[in-house]
Length: 135
Image 1 (cartoon, rainbow, N blue to C red):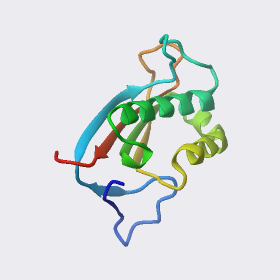
Image 2 (cartoon, rainbow, N blue to C red):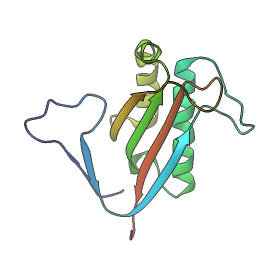
Image 3 (cartoon, one colour):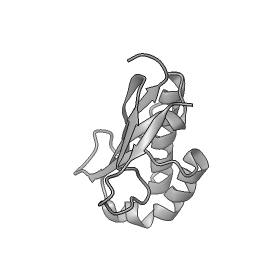
Image 4 (cartoon, helix red, strand yellow):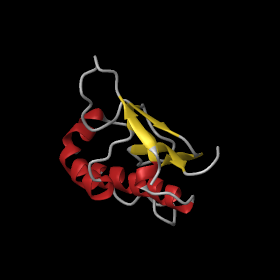
C-alpha cells in the first residue's frame, strides 16, 4: 500500500467525491488522456455513463500495467463535452466509481471542453499515480 496523506485546509468546505490534495512519495506515473475505446480503437458506446466508466477502466489498466492499482491514483483530470450529460449520469457514474474505487477519492478536477479529438467521445480522463519506490 502506498503511503499517502489526504490534505484539506481546515477552513475549506468538506469535499464530496474528491480530495483537495494528496501527499505521496514514490515513482510517478503520468497517464495520458484515456477515452472510451476498446482494443480496436472504437468508441464502446454512445452512452455517457458507459463512456465515463470505460475511460476510467482504461486509466486503471495503464496504472496496473505500471505496477499499481486504483489506490495509487492520486490525481484525475476529467474532460467532458457536456456538463448536463455528466450531471444526468452521476448516479450511474457514482455506482461504477464505488465498484472500482470504494470510498477512495483522489484529487480531481472536471472541466467542460468544446470537443475532444476522437469523434463520438464525450469523456477523456488523465491521471497521475504514485508507485512505491524512488522518484
